[in-house]
Image 1 (cartoon, rainbow, N blue to C red):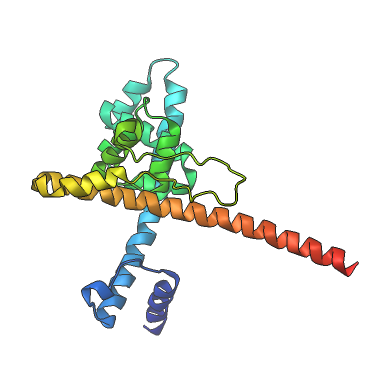
Image 2 (cartoon, rainbow, N blue to C red):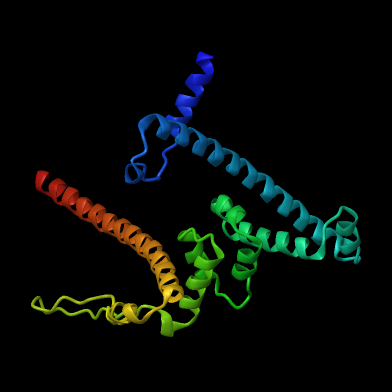
Length: 239
């Protein structure tokens, strides 16, 4: 019994929940139980992701072996798979091959989401961005794809010009006019339009979070370069 309790405690220590328990004033004893169950879900979902990946991979390999003589359709029909299911699994495997480090994300995608992301008209870099943002619901993915594939709906990015003048004005990277337009039109929106706007902002928040992460990593690169320069100067001075 003690060993089981120890294992549960270890699971809780190793797994960190990102849920905001304080927001809902959830008590510590209940919080502990929720995190334990969340850890179980997470670990078993990872195992399920591996199983789904193996199913898709096996199906893909057999499709290569059997399509040559035209027996693939008869084979998968014989094991109870429909044409639509096979199509979905093969499309899912294509995403697995592109995103081997994001198996859980690929597994979590619905059939409709798989169809949307495996559309041949969508550039691979856009799908990579969706994967980085961990977009999972079809509504999130639709909003994101509409924005990325229709530049009139995206936030305008203003190119930064290099200027050697030290008194140059601060250059802004984002044009805020779209946000100002949205703010002015809020009072004219009905409930459905407000919900759509809210969902778009949620996707944007994920995008901004990823951008902040990239900026932070880029800043660290500059810091490391500066540190190397300081070390070099110190070595020269010591000599």
